[in-house]
Length: 318
Image 1 (tube, rainbow, N blue to C red):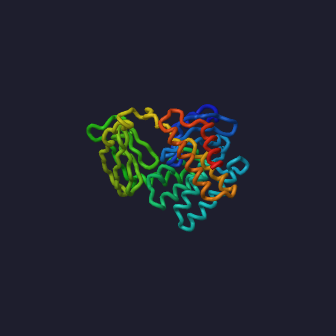
Image 2 (image 1 turned 60 degrees about the vertical axis):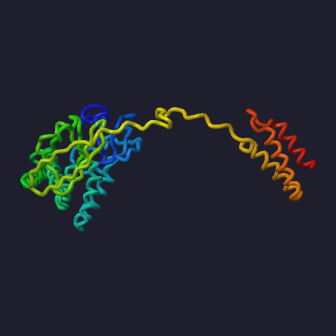
Image 3 (image 1 turned 120 degrees about the vertical axis):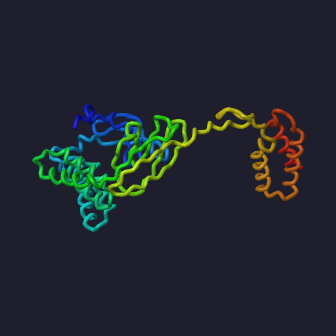
């Protein structure tokens, strides 16, 4: 593995990566001694910043979990929980534990167990890929090399394979999302291994609506499917009265007298009532303000502060 700041392990190389099938790393924001920070977008459209520990801090030459590094203890605990869950037949839980352990502290032993777990829950192509990765990582003298290579060879004839093609009129930059993988033009026309079962495909192209397809494929089956995006996206709707989106609307009408001076009226009325004067005084206050409102109607500036004070004085003297 290259240095965290250069070579194959440089942080910028992770831009575009999809984490856990949910978070796409859009841009590298900064790099520190322990981690790199990325701008990321969730598949639901939410944008966040994500900090990822440098892989070099979690790597080890033996390929086994090392509890002396910052990631080893957590990875070992997850690995052991995965083994317990797999022994109990809880394969979904076990695979999740192995995946998280391998993300924290990658190790061939974890990948071997994850491959076995994926195989037991029927994900043949995923298991095949993991066994091949282990065999490619280890030297032939390693005792895990031969079992990994043998498992991959045994699974090869059982793999379902699919060829993706484009429907007529589809843009050449159409992409197909299959699980966490996004396939582009370079993948079309190739016989690709996939897990058996039913897959939901999301097909997209710039300027087009997304379109969904369903792929159902059995173990050992070979099939071809033609896909394409939806129709061209509709232009953005104009604003009110044909105005462009974001254009300012008509200027609102100036507030009424009561809208401008409601607080003064209520405060004055409250002070009168708290003073212990009865209903007649409250009615006089309302009457004085009603007269003032009428006298100010239609003026651009409304009633001046002095007019309001005078109305209050008349109401109290009434």
